[in-house]
Length: 400
Image (cartoon, rainbow, N blue to C red):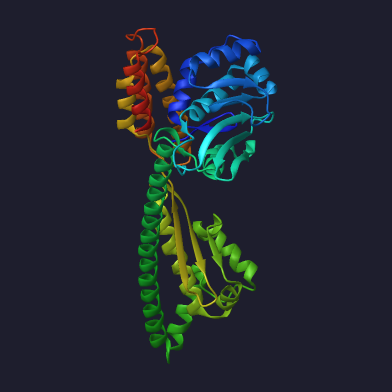
């Protein structure tokens, strides 16, 4: 999943890389640039925000204000080093027509943290200069908003993997919505069966009451005791009764047409239908309110007394298999620290989800056990830089 660092969303690989590299030690501007040059040897760094300066296609210019922030604040260094990691893994040549040769190209991190890209391309009629700009507030989507304008395609690392993951998550959300709709339809069908039973009972009662004054008086008295009487002087009084007797109404989960509520004051059949509908909705709510992922329900009764019921579901979980692969791929203490940082973020999301009934305690416990496992293994790992093979394996497992 994308990781938010400061004001930017970056790939997991970028976050892991920057997290493993950053220290609390402060540096001056020249020290920051020297450190960046060592960490990203394929990029050419400079200070400033002027476009079209530099040769080749690997230029990165950084505002003096941003460098000053990176000097003093380790969190800012983490954010912008992760950001630069994703820039370094962007293929600016891919996808261009052969006749449109890219002569030079560069990225600029501006005063406000926004990102600008510039390029000089060779066409039949001469050279053309192009620029694209993404404000800081939109920087989470910079690879979508900025790079396509220059026919730039990112290597299948950070952004493409991220877009595939987003597409997969959208598919999961769509499946969850369909499941919710199916459950709502089942609940609505149950309510309609209940309504049919109520209508049959009411019809039989009417047949029994006709021509029998004593039975009619007893039936009326019984209905007064149960609240199903004509004693409601107005809709406010009826609403108060509903609030006292039905949880789905008192909890703000029910919306009833004013016209139908008015009809219930004088029409016993409508009133009985309303009471039994809300009673069935209460039972449905009681049976589901403790279900993991259940976020609430909505009951809508229109002017004809027709019922629509909607329920919402939301779940969060940890990709346990992926996290175990990442733990196994960590070859150094810095690698494992990066994995631990991601696990801590997973744990925070799961604890928030547990408080909101979006997951159960077992899911939270999975994250805690993975963190414990990662900490134990970190003590057995060497404190050194990873070899190229180890670094490549770690990057792959962060993305897959």
